[in-house]
Length: 358
Length: 108
Image (cartoon, rainbow over all chains, first blue to last red; front, side):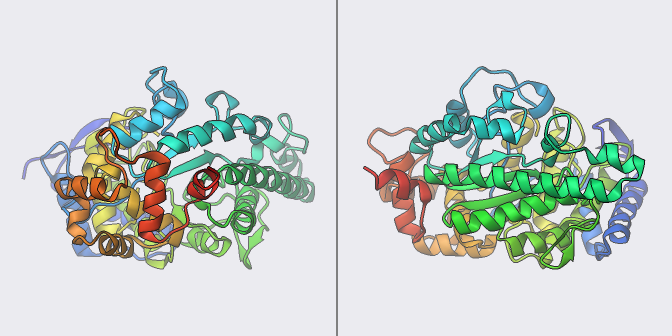
């Protein structure tokens, strides 16, 4: 068999003998199984993954009847933004126009109305300008037929100095001030919860159909704790607003280390554990993330990601929409993700991991 | 994250249900409002539309179904329901509460 054309995790094109691709797949699933204490992929699943990677076509697809639904985090800023944060293409169209393009030109199943691009994601700034988004969201909602999510990134880091009022754990921990760092994390988490619940209630009041907590737990376990509490409170206050929780990484970093939710310690959780606390909080759709390692091959990354996601789907009682953007779930870390890898990742996740969406 | 061609367009072509071009938005509503897993959501929507599950992704079937039911078509046809009007009919068809309809349609 001739060498297989594939890629590294940074997008670089390489060729690899079939035996090496198979070895990479095996190594990837073993790595996931070892770290997450989840089952490895079976030999037939590894064979199926190999066939997906070795397929000579530029793009591969699922079979009729296997199609899944799509959610995302950037519909309304992907066109007008710059490359840096969104893979944006610099077309100066409004958020409304961008969403209609997603609905009617890209045939997406949902779209996202996001905070103004210049706010930098700082929740405190979003809260100050929420009336702008409320009325803009109303206008878009009148015209869009597909479900629309209001998306924000509920990040705890904005509440630490220098941006926020609380001492920064990254300054306190190296000085051995562990309890002080934990207290700062707890206070910041509480403030973050209050602010995002305020925003959520405001959006619900004007008819927002869904809320997307994007890049959840990027600040570690205290942030994850806050995000879960946001969901619990909003499910009470906004019963007809669906909530999607999209994660930021495969592993919950223990900055606080002792935060718990529903009796479970959050630090150290992998996706199949994250989804259970998300369910307990009331999340409607869960989006796991597996980090792509750019120094490893696409095959290694793909097997690893499918192993984690397959277990997450198996234990979940809610829909699982795997995060499928650049740099996650085996898609190479590159602002123009190679479509050969994107298509293979989608096919593998649908056919082997049995996801409910991307 | 990623450019439109690399992300939503590729995912849509490779694995997506197709939104209002077919029945992807309807399946999406069932995941959102009832936490239905994909097979259950497809079955539920197919039964409500009185089509076979495979027809949910057949644009040649769904375009006419959507126009007849007034639940929005991807191509622009004057007089056909779209936006909030289509969502109101989707809510009634699927038996679900849609917040935007509750807040905006009924306000009028």
